[in-house]
Image 1: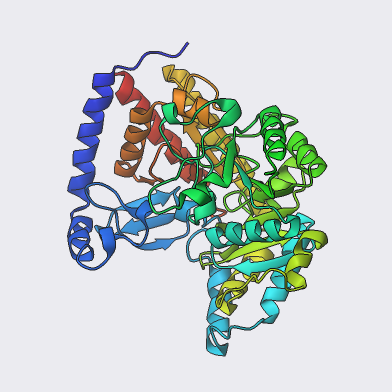
Image 2: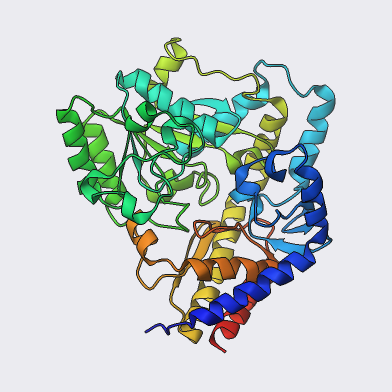
Length: 457
């Protein structure tokens, strides 16, 4: 049975580690003061912000990065999970360098976009592909395609899942536990301001790992004349730490959506190319009607993709849907993606990622058991985390109810002050790269052991 950790001890360590991190990042403070004059909030994205100032990075190579203060870290953040290839991979760098003198943008198709589509079709078993420039664009376009294909407007998603920053999916993500409503009839709630209520009302959320609740909500919507156009979901939730599908769940969702003529979209922005060569679709053996990719795809350059069946993507090919974008299939992004797929994300690379993740998960779990900490380690492919909860997290409700937020905050601070760069927030996980070594993951475990010892001293 897990010990009860002294809350005063947690707060003391948070205060100490906050002061230490602030003292060690004074050049970031100076850069923030400059940046805030014209860069709103001092950052290019709200997710890059931090109180009292963000950490600014100057360089990265392989599995390490360096901030503007000269602090070097093993990188387990990896660009919000994008850099599974590692930083400045020579194969990708060489491909981009060769492409640059030939022209960087035309706004028309190039050979590399054809070859990347061929490889994605092979990996996912979905025959038709289009490119975008981000995960948000991919999910936005996929939903539009699904709506056109079905002639319906309502969208169903999983409560707590993030699918990008366009209005339709900025609904029922991170909200207070007491506002989510009845599990059988979750509320549709905007994620921040500026989202029209009419758009919010068209998006309906259901719990993860509960196919019965999904089907009952679909049937009620059908009775109201609001049968969903699509269900968009992560096959494994990646923004509650890591939450894996329970046995039979994805198969049940596939059967339910097929029976009701609902387009099933697997949002693989976080899992695609990160947990297997063919993402969650390959890993779990359940094929959706559509899949969305981004992050890992571009090898560090902005890129996204949508894959689909012949039937669904016909509405793009016949001109019913305008799936457009000036930078879609940009030559630099496509040559980077091609090099990544052909030379970096190979079967040997995925075997290495699996070995690394097995080692870090086992190491963290051993620390948890050694100190009787409240939590467990979990991972898949290049992804994983320590979940500070005595109960197994299976969906948003169990996550919101059970996870220890102060411990998550402390773990991030401790890692940052001990040479481990991590994604901030209780919702995030580590991402390994193909160039991470056993030395790197052993260092992660060693730092976690030090934290556990300090907590229980």
